Length: 410
Image 1 (cartoon, rainbow, N blue to C red):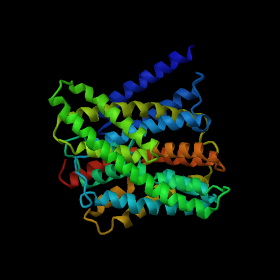
Image 2 (image 1 turned 180 degrees about the vertical axis):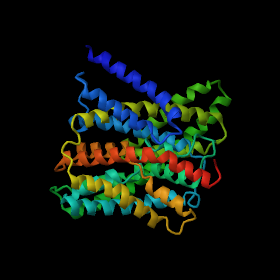
Image 3 (image 1 turned 180 degrees about the horizontal axis):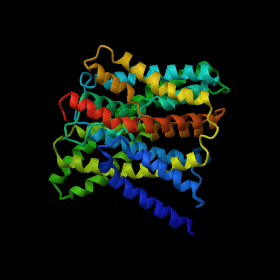
Image 4 (image 1 turned 30 degrees about the vertical axis):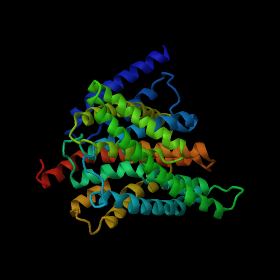
């Protein structure tokens, strides 16, 4: 059998599924990512000769695939947030990013060092990889499409957090790289990390994201008043904004993830009621789902090919501690005293979904530096992401439905 034709059939079935499954499963305690992981498991269990799905064996290709998925997801995430940015309105997601993520990284790195005797560099890398929540797989607990008004406390906090922390986790990935033994002194490496990887890169990401978002907002909403442009073209326009923002920011050594999200929410602030927002979001949503299909099927294939075959009880315990103790407890402490109700704080703290962003950070770091026991890092990350997808995927619908009924929204 032709491998090419087999891949086409598998891809066709997957795309058909991503088109039909989300609305069919909307009322059930099961998310469609679980189905695609299962499809990958099934396909790779057959003797079809499919391509090697283990990320570590194709690190560069895997890095760019994860990267494209995340930047498209970040644009879609920013475009569907109706709430304009201000320190007061965004106080809760800012707390989650600036306080909870730091607590999570520090706690998880120390736990990894204590439980598995992992060296400082890989411990920090693992923490930076798994601390940020995911903008790709968290659709069940995020706000609705632009203008739909589904921006309750829980959905807004989780959506905005997922958008911001995928950029702000990057400094800690670079911190892990700085901790790798090198010829220069650790003090010099940490000083460079502080001013360059934290201050400069974050600042450049925010500045370029805002500037490009403002510029493209004026072009997108004013140009059609002078020349005739079909509304359907704006799907491609927003993709151009995504790639341009990411590419320019990376060329200037800023954080492209952060810039893409900032550009998206800046763009969303222009003429909020305009129909182009719906068209742009719809295009990014469809493209994001296409990437999700490919990555989740390959992830299922990696599981079938033995990604977790060396998983130990202590490695599994580390991932479970993150999902059931470190993130929930840290979230409740961070949000203590906020205006959110206790059930809302509990939901925000619990639904720290891990996913494709974690895959990207790990693949990126392993391409940039030499970390000991890189296979162990993939095993822990793969197990934690799999557990998160299954657990959060099953619980998201009933929990969010209960919260909506409790608040009188359904």
